[in-house]
Length: 139
Length: 103
Image (cartoon, rainbow over all chains, first blue to last red; front, top):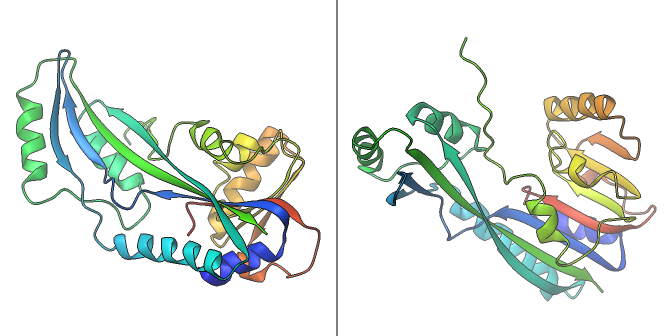
């Protein structure tokens, strides 16, 4: 990762921006059931095998700043939501996420199924995810 | 075969561009995109950028990006199979290097 950042930096003009967009390391995806009148939180998905990669990305960005080639211009978080109509769409949605995919914590999927089956027509399932944008400026 | 679902596990179009433009404009800039995949994000900003060089190591993704480029008629993007490590150290400079979900 550090090598990729250094190589990109070699081709950036002075004052140019290096931008990294990636999933947020600690704001994990969350699943809720939305009824016409309320939001019922179900679970935060876990991201096994992913935390190490995200930590490495953060360390690589910090490294190239420490080396002096870049300054930190800023960090911004963003959050987005997908509204799904049924349980099979939840399965399809999680399949779309690049590996390693998030997983339900123990009991989380059963809780979702139980909650979903007891909700009125017109309810939806929401998956909310967070991303982080880090901006570096080439010296 | 079930109908394809119209769902995406990526942010809605425009969200990432708005976040990026908190830090730098993309309009009129020379942009290096690392890990462009099928060009999902590339095509959101390409029409306003000056030039784009977009890399991805996945051949199928680059082929999808090239198909979409032909369909959209976008002429200022060069999609390349490979990784940024293969980018020559010398060459025309870029204004922005974008690592889109690729670190």
